[in-house]
Image (cartoon, rainbow, N blue to C red; front, top):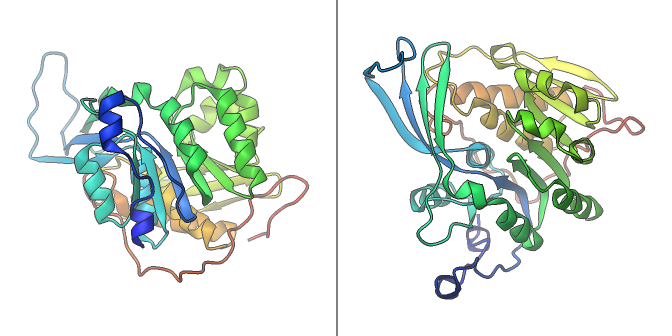
Length: 329
């Protein structure tokens, strides 16, 4: 990745400190994948025999502190497969350094003296519990909307639960007019399904990612999606559209921790999607990357790599619409 990509957004730090407002943003050469959303520091206690009872202290022999969050994990997964990637989020200094070491462009919207988000995960062999301090993420959405005015990409992936649906609809309309494809992973957010305009938002996105539980929760509006990709864990994944309904099995691995596996899947899927691969191959690569991510604690520590792809990639697979189906597998 060239230096222009590594410096996707140049922030005038002096002016930002003086005014306590976001810095200046500058346009940069178009990238393949722009990932927009929330970031966390993940503190993960792995291999617990069970979750603690009230007032009980359990001790763990395995622990990891790593970068996390949907935007970060998806970006690292795609970048390690050779996709030229930029992240727009609010990041700790450590997270910014780590992403740049992965050859990922960073647009850091954190302001001085703000606290980055932190999640503590308690992980057993078959269950997990979380405690999260949301920090700057509570104030992040308006900054993301502003920063997106200055970005260009072939594909934009969103990893957050939106509050200002009307403003995000305008963003999606602008991207579509520019020929940019989009995807979104809303995560587990029950209030979102009943929010005014959510049905229109979900229908404006080219690909919507969900896990199996989320697919049930969002069932009422899921019929509005152009393409729904459902992550089924150890059973693989499924792509549902107006043109087809296909599945792909997951490879077997010795899983250590499943934190971030779904976000890793997204990165693998989008790599194949941007390569113009058939739908089933997109699912297979997503399954492979998601499975590999579970071999170590945290969402990024076991992600696979491959040599960088050619500098002039093929056009991405176009998501299907009922009237214009994409190529069948």
